[in-house]
Structures are given as C-alpha cells and as structure tokens.
Image 1 (tube, helix red, strand yellow):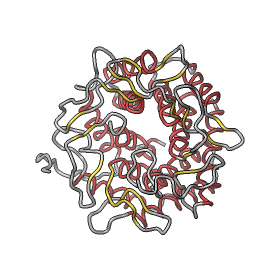
Image 2 (tube, one colour; image 1 turned 180 degrees about the vertical axis):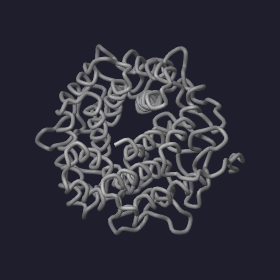
Image 3 (cartoon, rainbow, N blue to C red; image 1 turned 180 degrees about the horizontal axis):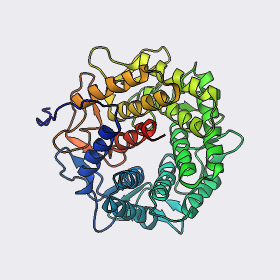
Image 4 (spheres, rainbow, N blue to C red; image 1 turned 30 degrees about the vertical axis):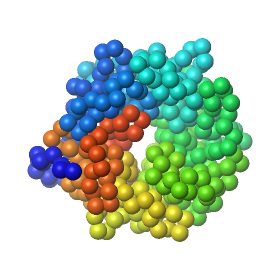
Length: 404
C-alpha cells in the first residue's frame, strides 16, 4: 500500500521537549476534529484519511484511552477545548459503559447500549487511568472517583494472597479460574502509578510496587528473566496457552518485547517516587534484553514476539511496541544518564518517522505492519486496538527528563 506522500523535514533533534510537544499536538489534532460523537462518547474507528467506519461500536479500552489522550494533551498544550472533549468521553464511560444495576462496566457498547458485560480487569485498568488523567488535568476537583474505581477493583479482581489481579468475570458474575495473565496486571500497575501521581494517595503506589515485585521479579524469575504472558490459576507459567496464536491482540503466545519494556517503564516510574536500585537494574535488564532479541537489523524496528528459545515467533511490527520503547528509552536515560538510551531513543524515532508517522493527516498510520514495514490495510484507529494512546502517552512519558 502506498504511504501518504507529504513528509516534513526531519526534526533537528528528536530528543527535545519542543519536538515531543509538537508531536503530541500533531497526534491529538487528528482526533480533535473527528472523534467526538455529539450523541455520546467517541467514534473509535477511522481510516488513514479520517473516514469513520463501524461508527456505532464502542469498546471500553478505546473509550477510556481516548479520555486519557484528551486530558493529558489538553493539560500539556493548555487547550481547554481538548479538556472539554475529554470530559465528554468521561461522562460516557460513567453514563453508558457503567451499568448501575450490575455495578459493572460494559466491555462493549453498540448504539449507546451495553452489549458485552463480561468484566475484564484489562478494561477496568484504563477506567482507573482515565479518572486519574481527569484529576491530573484538573477536570475533576476531587479524588473520589479514582478511589471509587480502585475500591471496585479491590472487591472484584484483587487476589491478596497472589499479589496480583485476576483477569475475567463472566456477565453472570462468575470468576474465570482457568486463566491468569500479566497483561492486565501490567496496565493496572501503570494506572495505579497514574492514580498516585494524580491524588498523592500512597495506597496506589503501594499496590503498584506489589505488582512490580510479583511480575517483574518473582514471576520473571520463573521465565528465565523475562515476564511470560500466561499463567495458571496458581500463577505457574502456562507455556502452552495460545501456543498457535502468537499474534493475539490481548493474549499472544510468547514473550512480548513490548511488555518487557512496559514493565521497565513501570519500574522506573515507581523508582522516581521510591528510589530502589533493583528497580533501575531490572528495568535495564528488561529493556536491554528485549531490544537485543527483537531489534530487526535488516528492516528496523522491534518485532512482536519471541519464544522461550529466544527466536522470533512473530516478526511483524506493531505501533505500540515502538511507541512504548521510545518512552522507556527516555526514562532510562533519566534514571541512568547513560547516553546509549538517547541513542536508542533517536534510533527508534528515525525508524518511526520514516515508517509509522502519518505526516499528512496526523497520528500514526496503522496498528501493525509486515516485517519489511508494509501496511496491511488502511485502518488508522480500531475500537479496542488503536487510538494513538500508546504513541501520545509515550511522548508524555518521554517528556519526564525535560521537566524533572
């Protein structure tokens, strides 16, 4: 597929506050003029040129992530209109996704009616993060909603004896005891850090630290140093879960380089508030190890997955893996002052500027590409899959060294 032809001059410096702020502005500009649905919530699926599709369908992950995007961009860019759009989306989360009689959030909504009522901790993590973003942006003036969602997570998902959250509860309220996973816990850790930074309440940081110790230390040791994706109900590694599905969007088989790097990011963000040497050391091990095993020396970029034998099991390139790695490289430089991480940050940006950034319409082009960086379709945003959350928030994270 052909790429948009307009490409501006490459920035003089990718590792700069001005560049990152401008890129945040460029991403959110695509969504600012077309995402808001006047009848409620956000349109979530767009083609590269901005044409909407699947207009009636909403998924809670995108509903919440788009709130986060508008809140954080509005605060950083000092744009009250973005904050207003973010508030519009937050109201939809609470008035449409949330079903009071069930005291739960619908995973999917169609034509503004709750559809899939299976409760996913993965989705709830972003509801918590959305309320934290609203508090950070000053759109809400109390910590009450952050606390309410956290308390709901305590009742529904928290497993104190395991130091982790369970994953799924059926629409009938039955806990799925066939599966435990790291992905929902990783995003829960991220959301808890955001909740602490928004409110100052240390119980959120306490819980984030427990999750980091459980997954990035204890369970990673069982995986030979990396965090495996899937576990039994007793949190023993399940090496066979989804073995024939290494490209699954939420539960892929294999080690995910992007998830090793996201755990590194979480460790560094906890370390900022509670300095502990092991967290920086572990973050370096996860980032450096994932980079070494997944960087493509021929076509550039980081591949999607590698197996227990440390060979690639999915060589495709996903937008979020590149975005999260940009953020973590910046945070590693902040924590270590080692210039190798600026080099990797710039290396990734040069690759993404060439292959991923939509220089004509704004945002990043698509969800994934082939190993040789060819698009597979013209879908820029997909409900539940991509709304440029990873790319925008990674720029927000990458700004930390410039404001600390």
